[in-house]
Image (cartoon, one colour):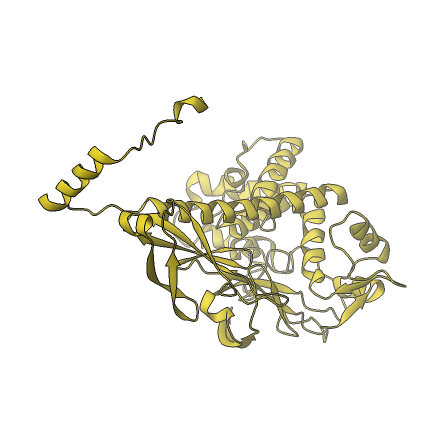
Length: 96
Length: 307
């Protein structure tokens, strides 16, 4: 899988370099490597696109977007975990 | 075509001021934004809310819409030659949005919207070549399919794609299909498609990271005396030794029989579940009675001391 530089990533998601830099600094995405420049896994484009939609559609600033993404990911994880634990509990309570 | 009550969609009164409309939109947009909402119809609801706001925030569009709405309420909206669909001639015949309209694509508004305000009223229209959007869809994957490289077919919109899922692909991982995302505009390249793997709940195995858990029913005497039990794994059955004096819920590790990972392979945990027979004949009841008389065991000895 190939990696993207900051400029390439910015072009791919149609956002200014400064905006993508802010997105990285807020931890919305993380570079795979820092040395000597940032390099990103291509899969981050989906996350950046999602962040940009939230920024635009909900008129949120980028740190709000970071928080929203973090919480919704956490929410999703917890829902899945809850469903999995519920299944395990049912298995254990089921007499067969 | 269905008449859309934009006020009702936003949950505001028809005389609501801009501030109230904006507030209502913000609240609903947060609630239904497809990137954060877990609501199944989030995308449709978000589109509806966005469209309503797009019209009501704009004084000119709102005035035009209000006029139409009043006209319809005064009885003009009943079927007939002066149906509201004919209320405004311009904009008619503009094709509705494309088949795969997404909420941030131009032309994502409803046919109703297009019939009043015409086409091209989407969320922004940029000229020049534009790369297609990257799309992400969830791909259900059976646990059995993670053991070896697996060919899968996945339907995305009207297309059927063939994908090879590499062995060891785990939950939440993304598989990238280059150039299979949304088509570009004006000669721009197509976006990519990302498949986000969702492991399908298995009737027997639960997943914990790379480890699998299987709940194994055992008889009370098997738990006490020990036993050899045949246990399913993803790759065939194995014989499991239940040690004597096993408690209910005991976890027994079967090394290397979990999910194949890119870096390491997980283990399978057999969790013992002591199950009572559903019916006891008189002879077994007698045996239990003998046990009750002779066994020096109080399961509640420490129970209430914990309180």
